[in-house]
Length: 336
Image (cartoon, rainbow, N blue to C red; front, side):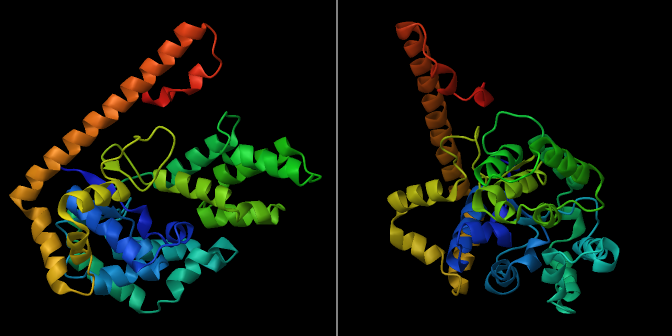
């Protein structure tokens, strides 16, 4: 798994709200990825959108997280300071002609925002960061496609359609989706917040803040931050592995069984500098890297065996019963 990069959407405040996360939950995810991946990739905005993440980076784990094991996802900008200043300018209410929650999240930090951004650039120097360009157009494209005709029952289009029917709204579905697509294609700033505000103004306030719809928007947004180098075990969508070796629940269940719950409890003591030192030294040790090879090999073989048997089951049912409408849905075509 040399060079493996893991994106941390769990650092985002919206993700944390969906997961009803606390500091212990976030620490568990971070330590899992530190032990399994070569580097964790973090969107810099999350450092000031979430109090949990801010505490983690600037207090609890400031001695553990470094340019060796963490990278900022900087997009087109050279530094975190450049990014946050540009983002603030773009979201300025005078420019945007509306006030979005994201802007207020940054403003509440006052001068601390830029001071911490400069500290991030010192701890995580620019030459070691990850640059994924075109995040804004990619999010627009993903959202535009999700509003177009498709067969996904969880798409934004499908959820809009159901909402209009269930609430018997006097709105034309095709007209409303066309307007939303025009917004996505032409608006100066398209984000989860600005799209949600646009929906609310169109009369879909209840829908845009419902959990299924919010999850869908966040999923699209997080995927816009990825490229072929970066995996995101925190995003569980159709087509993902059945057993993801990077999944924190899978990893810690195996860890508990192999090393004991007391070992896990000791490692996840954020208030103990000694525990954080052990995590760092363990992750860097040759013995642990050899363990990782075995761990990934076993779970990969398990994954392959599960899919092989699923395909065999589908083929057997099709041959035995000749016509079985359920067969096409037994094995996801995404896996082919």
